[in-house]
Image 1: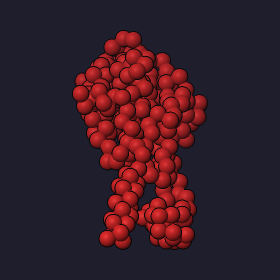
Image 2: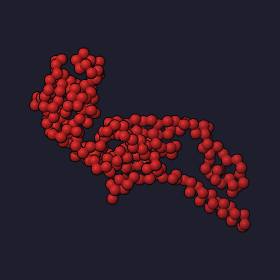
Image 3: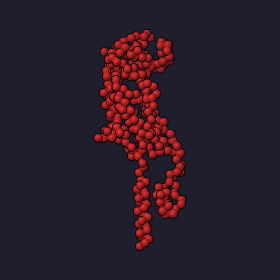
Image 4: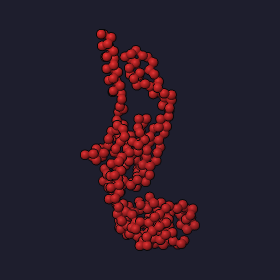
Length: 260
């Protein structure tokens, strides 16, 4: 009878220990997020995880942090320019049997069982490059463009910078197919991101644009269309998707607000 009672007591203790160890502590949010300003208009949002962080969770946290930062600072939306995966792999060789490790003092077992050989574990580190805006504009009608390298313009531009080639556009636009945009709102631009930044700073809905056309510098005036509300809606959709975490986490405040 005593032996049966002792066995039952041990079984209850083991069950309690295993139940307590079955779930990890929530992954912290704030202490792993870093916002860094790279220039007056460009920031980065970084989330550094640990061996218990899923890659998707790290991506979501970094995105949420960027949107939250912009909204907290009175901007209407976060404009993302790209994501960098700086995750690293580390050798992790101390994975033990949880049952043996915690039950061993009770069973007087001084040699807990090792379940695996050394293995590589991915430590997620995700970096988003973004800007905050409350005055995002695009050209109207919006041309189809792509960046061109500096060496293609060196003989004409003389500043050894690239430009933005118009590959398609509507007939109502002052821009023509084959134009290479070099200046927007009097700002030198050599990429689509820089063009958006220049349009963000433009106060009027008509902006001067300088292009290289048939080897000559030509100035035109283009209309713009405010799209910050569209970007805000896109951000809100991203936020709703990102806040659906796949593991136990310390949910950011903005995600709790969405859930209400």
